[in-house]
Amino acid sequence: MMEFRYEILPTDFGSRVLLIPRTAPLVSFQIWVRAGSKYERPGITGISHMLEHMMFKGSRNYGPQEHARRVQEMGGEFNAFTAHDKTVYFENISPEYLEEIVKMEADRFLYPSFDPREFSREKEVVMEERKLRTDNSPYGKAEEELFALAFQAHPYHWPIIGWASDIENFSREALVSYFRERYTPSNSFFVLCGQIPDNALRLVEKYFGAWKGGKPQDPPMPREPEQRGSRRSEMIMDVKLPFVFLGFVTPGYCHGDFVLLSLIDRILTEGESSRLWQSLVHKEALASRAGGGIYPMGDYSLFFFYGVSQGEGDVEALEAALVKEIVNYELEPPELEKARNQVLAETVSSLERSYYTGISAGEGLINCGEPGTFLRQLERIKGARVEDVLEVWGKYLKEERRNTVLIRGKG
Image (tube, rainbow, N blue to C red; front, top):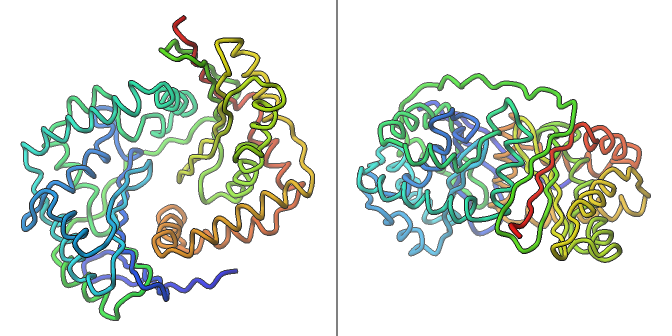
């Protein structure tokens, strides 16, 4: 097991700071907020993502884009992302600039401007983003349809970017209200990973000390009912090559079976040596591309597969072949060992960067309450036996749990 030392310290304003010392010459400063699409409701879907955009549009002491300009002048990296369960802001910088970074982050978290003109412009930007990535993208539209089909009760049903009608009707008042509700000290935490200055905690308390707000009242989080039969959706779109998506609701990030499913993912979908590619593209010549992956989320995950046809032919034959490979519950020890070595090597390699170690630890803390969750997962992968993987494979990837989205061309 790799060395992983950390300390979680409370702050005097009601938040927590996760410190992960590394010898790397940089420090990754991250702020994690429990503000993702699952905390939204119909009418304001996508508002977490919209709020992330607005957090870059100026605050009391910094104008729009000034934060970004200063980080770039420091030679650092910065960005943010919104997911189903959280929004994360980060900078990767030299430790000598940490105080300036903490000062700027505190300004936008405590005193964002949310200028009405910037809000109107950014709403148009988000609408264009949705059109580009979803409405005008057959693959984006199929992905959105797959989530809506697979999750009937849970808020994972709606997209992170939000429904178009909700985005169009966003009000600045709703955004400010959501910000005040979710962006509070007790609903957020800090991660510092890398070469951490001795005064890091004092810096956070110095600049964030005036941050106020209580614990938000989370909306009821319904359990997804057990799926007892396959579901199907077919759409006609302007595509030259028909394609099919399959999805299965699987356990969330903290569940012990999640990492075994990641091994199955590697075996079935990863690269041109994967089972799907070898069978559907090379052997049967039914697909031009084939693959898949797992969307890891806190409450559940979605294990998906896809196949893109080689022409305008029989997409049902491609679908049948895809299903056949997925439910081919056979596994030999060498195949498992190859998948295990690939997952372990890639994970350990990514953890050499402070940013990815911080992200891995933050994921464990926000979802499971334990920053070292990823190490437990690595140990589970190391000890996985063929029979363990086959048991999980047959449990979750079966006919009555399948969701299918098939896209046909207009011709």
